Amino acid sequence: MHPPIRPNLAFGVVALALVVSAGQAVAEQKLGHLISLHVETVIATDTHQGMDPKLERSPAAKRLRAIFDYTTYRLLRHQDEDTRCGLPVAFNLPGGRILHVSPTTVEGNMIVMEMVLFAGAEPVMRTELEMTNGGSLMLVGPRLPGQTYIVTIGAETDAPVGRDLRDAAAPASHPPATNAALPPSPSPPQN
Image (cartoon, rainbow, N blue to C red; front, side, top):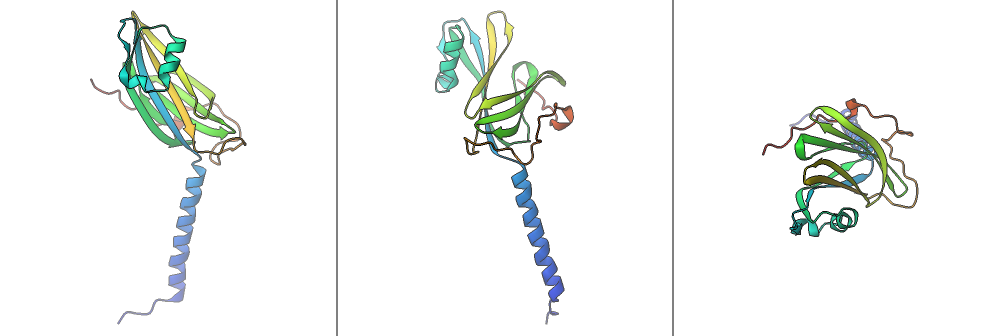
């Protein structure tokens, strides 16, 4: 026969379970809105081979033709990652460069992000910007004889649009970034 369960012990176990599940709900809420990031790396040349068929299906194809006058666009890499405000994501780029993208807040129809570009372990570019939900940004470079690398970064969120939404985890103002907030840079892929 089992000894009877004491009411205080049973109450304590239930209370602990409720505290743990409430803590998980608060932690999920503090992570902020889900942000989908899309990064495409393209090499542009003048070899008269046209648009890569994989790139042709991308929203970036029309913008590439409108902005640049190259005759050939080849998709090197397409990466999609989901994150939440306050959680950075790293993307490997050609030449051993690594791009860290960290959405910080959603304000109205705008996604505020910090981006840091690394060449090895050294940050070579750091910027904070606001991007329209569903919008994109193009980074151009490096330019080599006869070819140029173009990186398109797109972002969209599940947050309701049309009103200001400041994420619980994000600070009220946007302080300058520090390397301490960034994850370690991944090693570039081996070819």
